[in-house]
Image 1 (cartoon, rainbow, N blue to C red):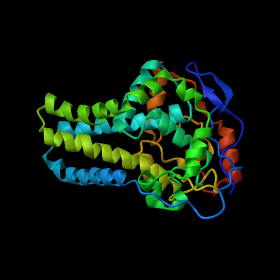
Image 2: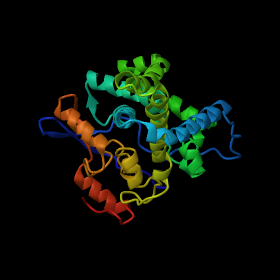
Image 3: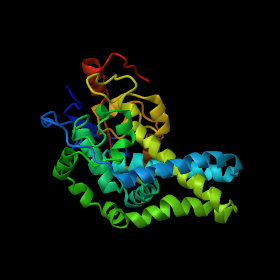
Image 4: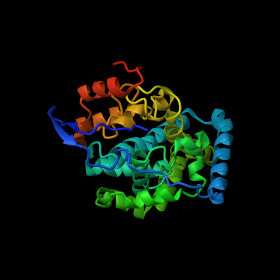
Length: 334
């Protein structure tokens, strides 16, 4: 299967409007030398603890849906705010900043994104970024943590309910992750991750409505707590599942990742997935800037405030050339 990225330089956008060429320095480009091992696949080992916990979480989220009419407008608004903060911790933080190094963030912004990432509770930044780099480098193979070839359920949630394929572990150990280990914010969050998750994912979302506008503790826990958390999880998982199965492929018709508008909306900009797997180092994950892409708007605003800089962008001519050469014919500008 023909895969992924055009070698070459990105354009780095500076705050003063200047642009310079710079190569990608992260191991996020597909490795077409990898070959799956011949013979029978290793047995699938179910992690029953995860099955039970995920079942309880989703049951709690379903119950929370019936509580929505009883919640105050302030609680619903707070739930949305928590959703957006959580999502940014994944999209602008673990994904675009730490997995792909597609822009640079100041210490205050990195601290915010790490805190937001703890609110999202999807493994610490170090582990999330490691697994995501493996996903890009070995996409749709045995070494891909959520290999979509194994079906929707596996790529959506099933991969979290079973032991990792040995190739995922092996390839993850061989990645160069020195940039993550050198980031004190990443390693601080990793060290205190469990404590930060309890505080940011459950205590803060619950206590704010209870203390500030006297929402019942029951509603405050189930709606901005469990329901919001479950929605963030599934919005992220849809990038791994739906965006690898349904949609068009205007940039590379030879790979599974697709452009999926529903996922773009639910995951605040991460559904331009054919583009992202073709050009993984582009900070916008799309050629269309802020269009349907709140995460890109957020990063641009952080650059305007001086809290971020050096956004990597694929040159327009490279995008057009790639779409014409390997796209499925559905590409259109704007």
